[in-house]
Image (cartoon, rainbow, N blue to C red; front, side, top):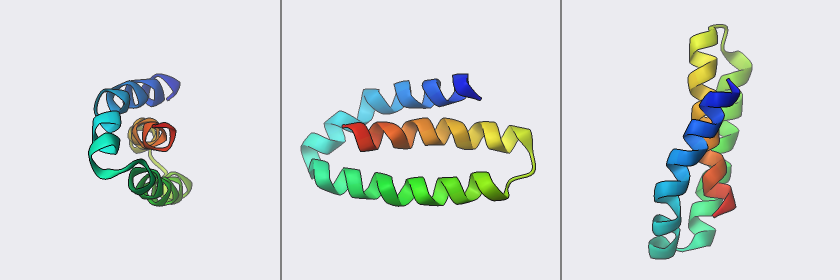
Length: 68
């Protein structure tokens, strides 16, 4: 699951900074917070390890939104 997180983070760091420059960092940051809350709710209620690993990968992508 940690590897999925870092792969998602890496993919996000390739695309998110350009989007943040184009649309504004605050909008991307707030959108990332919103998606993070939804993702954490999904992690809480999942019972499947494969789905949880995918959600951790998405969490890495979303984390790059909050760091850009």
